[in-house]
Each structure stands twice: as C-alpha cells, then as structure tokens.
Length: 212
Image 1 (cartoon, rainbow, N blue to C red):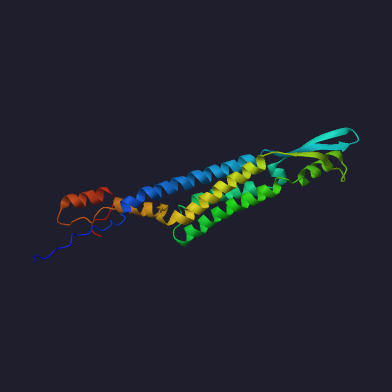
Image 2: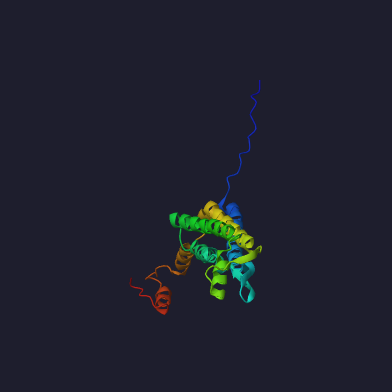
C-alpha cells in the first residue's frame, strides 16, 4: 500500500514589524489628535461664562457673571499639564513613557471631575456680588448655569482617552532619542582606508583626522 502523506498545513504568518507600523501610526495619530483637541476644548471652556445671576442691592439688581476660571482653575491648569505630557511622551522611553502617559490620563480624569464639580457651583458668583456691593452677606438670586462646564468635562474625556491610548500603545512608538541616534549613525562616515588616498582626502574635507 502506498503511504499517504499528509498535506502541509499552512502556518499563520507571524506579524512583521512592517505590519505593526500602520497600527502604531494610527494609535499615535489618534493620541495626538485627542490630546491636542481635549486640551484646547478644556482651555476654551474655562474662559467662558459658567454661571450668572442677579444680586439684590440697595441700588437695584446687580447682574454678575462667573467664568470657568472664576469657578475653578483646575481644568485649565490640568489642560496645560496634559499638553506638556503629550510632548514629553516622545522624549522618554520605557518606564518614563509609562509615567508620562499615566500623567496624561490622570490630567484628563482630574479635568472631568473638577468641571463637573463646578457645574453647579455658585460660590464664585456670591463672592463677586459681595465684592461689587460692599456687602459680605450679598448673594445671587436665580442663578443660571451654562453648558460650558460640561464642555470642559468633554475635553477632559478626550485627554483621558489619549492617556489610555498612550499607555496601551506607547511602547510601540518611536522616541526622539532613537531618531537622533539613527540619524547620527547614518551621518557617521566609515573609517577611511589608509591604502586609498581618496578616502583620506574625503576625511580631511569633513574635518576628521584620518589617522584615528
């Protein structure tokens, strides 16, 4: 009887570095986009009116407004920290990149929490009313809150997502130091051959000592 040879079973191809590159580039682009957009949204929302109302004074109703920066300076401060972390991600590697990515994610979470806590805060308005009227007991009646605190919180969510992406895929991204090292390696000429005068002349033209 003829022996039956089994057909070769195709083995799954291992994922090559070239195949991983597009995924790394996509995650890098998404992190940069989410981080920059989230910080911009949080900073913009912090400069808008979060609450307004009228304070009853002897001279009549005194209209007061409170911007996000009056209510809390945390979202704007954390947005700046997040931008710095976003840039620092590419300057560090390994454990440093993990720490900076975590800082980016924490900045986003802190922005969300502080914006939501300030969404119904009227203390800034009461303080403004007391200052404007000269009466420390003056308060604001019929306070109206805007949607800007929630916009700031949305910016924080984007920052948080950027931090999560950096934690998940940051190990696959290139770093500035690696790029510079590769550039220096490419720019470094081979040691000149003493038996080839043209190599010696080229080394001298580059300002190198061909004897070393």
